Image 1 (spheres, one colour):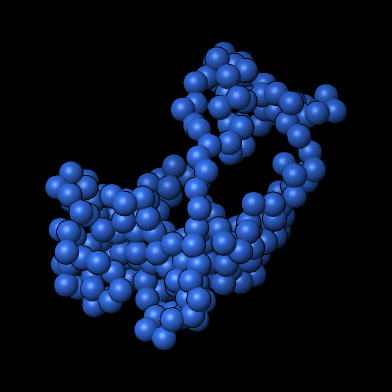
Image 2: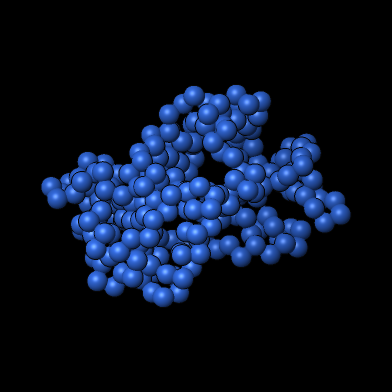
Length: 223
């Protein structure tokens, strides 16, 4: 890795979502333990989250996801287009079939969250090697067993997580693993302050238009 904070930009999404939280916990990924161990703030703002279903296929998919998450204790509410407009009045809802609202969801400050995870990981006994490149992955009998660093030293591990972002595909290819990952350039827009915007509005995501909208600061909108 390079440095802990690289990539944690002020305009990173900062979404702390519960939508897939139950599945993540089942897989054993528990970032909450590191956060708790750090005793550091993440800038979490429980403003809520609404995902829009603008076609029948997404409505069917989101109902299935919502049912699973309710079973796991996540409060996911199916709401009408009118209710979506009530939560985010600037949202166009004439083509919305339903919204899926998680009141306890919200957003974090990406830099603060990264710092809390790093501090908590260290407090739990973990070691972070900054400015250190991984040259290769060790494998035995078809599974990863560790990594080789750029200086030739090896680190053995029960699990290896390929979190190399846009370079994940190339790292996987070294061992014949096809990772269908492709970097995609995209843009974000931040408005000036608008008097009609309430910073307490929830994050709204509309997969049909490949858009999310949130109010990261007082009366401004980011999308």
